[in-house]
Image 1 (spheres, rainbow, N blue to C red):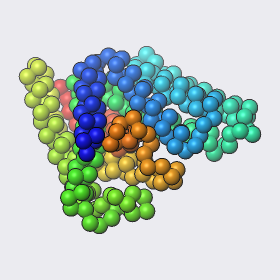
Image 2: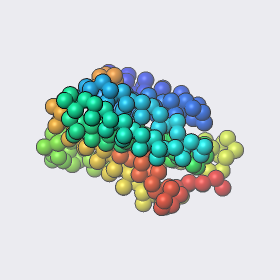
Image 3: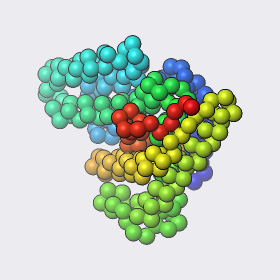
Length: 279
């Protein structure tokens, strides 16, 4: 538990620095680094160690977070096409060393991780600093708040297994406690953030009605991301994706639920309804 708390405090400190420099390329760089490390953990966990294929994947994951601005976003489709062609060329040149399913899974893993994490940047670039940061906080709080509350609720009240064939330690009681705790975390953080913005002279209007409707979907999507990661680890025969965060595992162990929740936040606010605006 001590290691878990220390790692969490260090992670919160790093997050604070990134948010403090939110309206800069520091956020892009942070997403790029997290994407590369998470992708490396996933590929090595799968036993995919073909150097050329992996380097191409790392290069893609490092590049995408810097191509979301209005001047460069037009090139994303071209980069996607180029990445697919490059992987096929590597396969043709190394077909005795690398199997086509490895190439296909590398493409899938890379696209999911790079683009899911990059929605953090897309929120800022499309909705501005104040609103974009609010959307980021909603996604992160829905994911990590649910994870944390589910952990403690499961330890205290857990009896019935949620998905024993995927993650034996997860319980129905933990999921319920996590969902409720995650929702409360988002609402509390939303109120505090709006108050902070008001003190800074920004009138941030939060659409609490829409937020309440969205919250169940957000906490469930975070849980699904966590369960999907657990299923992948079970198939790979590993306990954690990495060891960079003592007590927590690897980067992907901490961001699996974010990969589920954050893209849904972006989809909701971009295509369904805004959750906040400047009044």
